Length: 76
Ligand code: FES
Image (cartoon, rainbow, N blue to C red):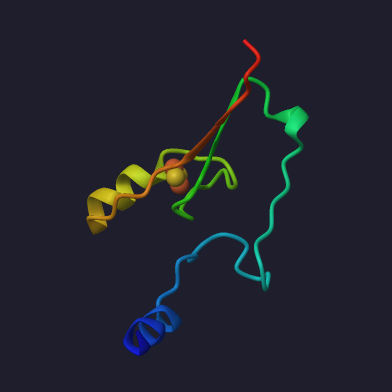
């Protein structure tokens, strides 16, 4: 467990989104979700906080398996 903690302290997930901020916090009004919104979880999107497909390249290059969070409205 100690080794895990050390490893996570060294590893950085975010290498490109709002690097000048101490925390990256985004708020999306539920009214703006519409029918569907696709949110980035790989921290590589240039359309942050939305997915732009960058996770595909990241997964190919690293062997990772990250993908977006899809939020859908129940309204049709
Ligand atoms: Fe990050 Fe798609 S670009 S999850």
